[in-house]
Amino acid sequence: MHVLPPQPDLSRLADAFKAARAESGMTFDELAAASGLARQTLLNLSAGRYHGEVQTWAILARTWGMSLDDLIAPIWDEPEAQ
Image (cartoon, rainbow, N blue to C red; front, side, top):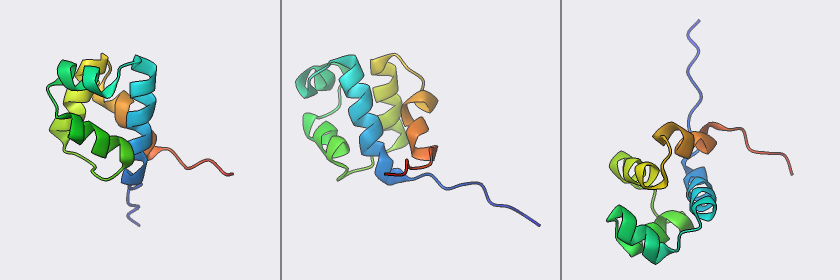
């Protein structure tokens, strides 16, 4: 029997973005300047309107001084029961 690996929950990317940005203390303008990404792209990621590309997330991880795996780890977590 072949068991498929779990699928990532891409809707949680916005939460991962918001948590990392909050931890960094950077404003959207500061993050845009440090990463070279458009402020509107950052706003869309934060709001969950855009999931971005791997390159975008790699740039953000490097800007925040963390690994890509650590940045997007929450998309693999089980949602907490509320």
